[in-house]
Image (cartoon, rainbow, N blue to C red; front, top):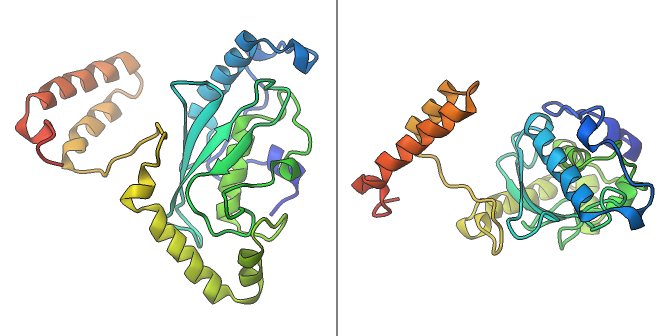
Length: 244
């Protein structure tokens, strides 16, 4: 695991951290007291738009419909000891953002040396200061990606997991597999209050996926194609909720 300073500036495979915020979000207030809700929300929306291109592979986030200060997130782990796991988390953003760091907490149970039993990571360790334009939410997502990509005991939050990782790798991996299997359980997939939801892929989704891929360069055409598909699907007995 790299040092905290490296986490903020590093770019793991699949993630491209933007060098600076777009011009529309660069002018910042000098103190936390001067952060207006308008400026903060504009800054957050700009960050969210940038994430479409720069988020690490396998990580998805969605701002809550009730508050822009809460983002629901999920990581699909594709390699390493946690491969196959689907772990959900929440990013809580302070009202003084971007002058103060956000907080991240896992909703899914994760057996990991650097994640506490109640899902906390030590954000103060990884981001001892939160610097405007240098530290972004994409950097927090990059940290999440690295936690699963390369397990370490740096800044231990779960003593039992850290000890097993160091002294008994077989038992550690067995405990990890338990949490991986639990993470894909149907009840764990849809925790209460989470607005970021996924369904199992089946043949009925293949058609709309194909249409989307055909219109990658034309968002309006893609939306029109999806609407046409949905209108047709609503009238289909196999798509009206009678089957799953």
